[in-house]
Image (cartoon, rainbow, N blue to C red; front, side, top):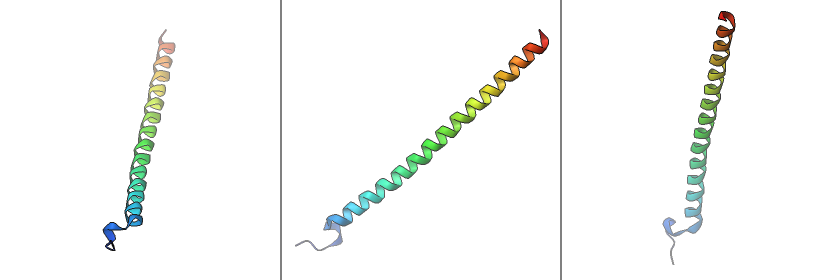
Length: 60
């Protein structure tokens, strides 16, 4: 009979679950960073576009 900790299925399952939790936490942080980066790029592009339209309106 296997009594060592390596052969206990619930220990292996707990390790797998903890690994999945840390993996999803890392992915969540990466996805949040990508979302914020995209939002700020869009905001910056919008501001630059409005500034260019304002300049064209002032000079024409």
